[in-house]
Figure 1: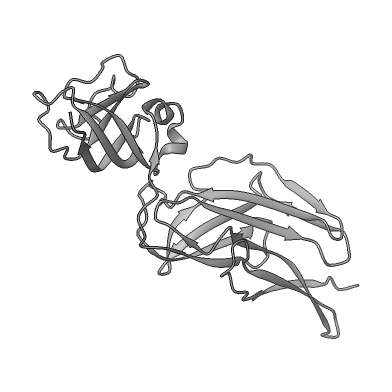
Figure 2: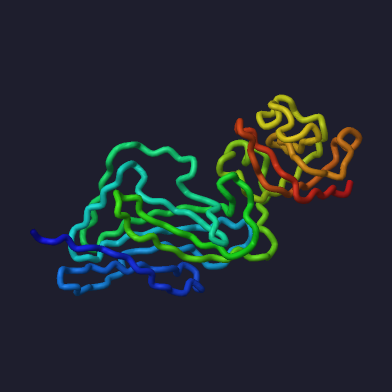
Length: 268
């Protein structure tokens, strides 16, 4: 009986110093006599190797069939791949975390030379939505086929100690895009509402999200709670113009709020 060729993968470490470059994987076809023919099959890469704190990390995972034969990949569910990130050997984020996939066998056929590409963005947060600190991070990717799975691929990035990327936003931008906003560093310029938020505002209607001392800020698009010190009196300073910078978070019930990092009172 003819023996099936065995595909094994070995990492080829390619420097990722230039934007858009990453690591390749070599797939080796081994025949019965021990001969081999190594060809690059695919890899994972980040758009660039160095990122500012808070900057979205764009990831691309590509599989290319260079075996010279049609390849059929079979998966036990609707999940075709996974991407995860480690720091100092500990996993901090996984793309599939919290996601649900159809529980049906799936297959994907690749003709010789055909590619299958997946793109994702990591917002520099953990699985629980916390901002990660500066440092070196290793990104892994792998197809989730039936075992034995192809060897995982990886690349590395550095999150620098430069000033965090803060995005000026309106309250409605956060409220209308909660899942996308969570983990982002934002800046809201508006009016200090202290302990008197707009009770009709969707983000304020449920009440203080973290502590009874949480306060509110409003702009022309809405009102949202902020947790953390403001340096202002929650009653007598209501109405002052402020600029608050912080991280967007949400409660278990989905209520968005901002965890304050810096609050500036504008000159009257």
